Length: 203
Image 1 (cartoon, rainbow, N blue to C red):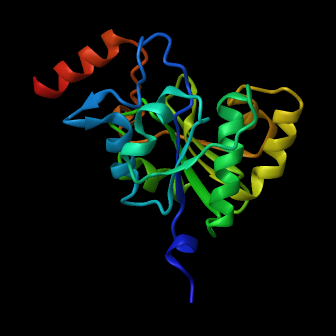
Image 2 (image 1 turned 60 degrees about the horizontal axis):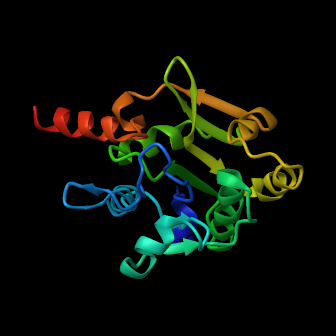
């Protein structure tokens, strides 16, 4: 019998950023009555199992939220390896849990939805390593589905000093798809972004 973890993609939330432009930890920002990280984890859990949060133990997200949630935190990324290191560590954990693929997003995407995961997974053909959302102007490597078999290749990139998420897309077989609702890809980098998004939700 196939386990649910084998049938469903894992979910990975990359939460190790320093939130410099926001001025405070984005994972802990209030969104509709709960921390943004909690809201995102709840949204992707509709399609993903397990849901993993990648963040070093020194990150503000981990300091603020690790003791207050029942999320599974992946903290083994090499120091200074950036989101690529966090992705590699979380994909390894997802593979160990039996997942063949993982949906990956950032902790500042409060409108992420199960529909985005469905559309990306539908594009994951046998020939693709990665399926990434593309909005017509740019790729969104933190709104993508990655095969967990990529761990060793990502380890090589990190060992070579690569920090850019876009480097993964260049190094692997990547399929790009336009998604039906661009709002799913909205991220909030600065206080003004968050304010405008909140206003748009009530008007």
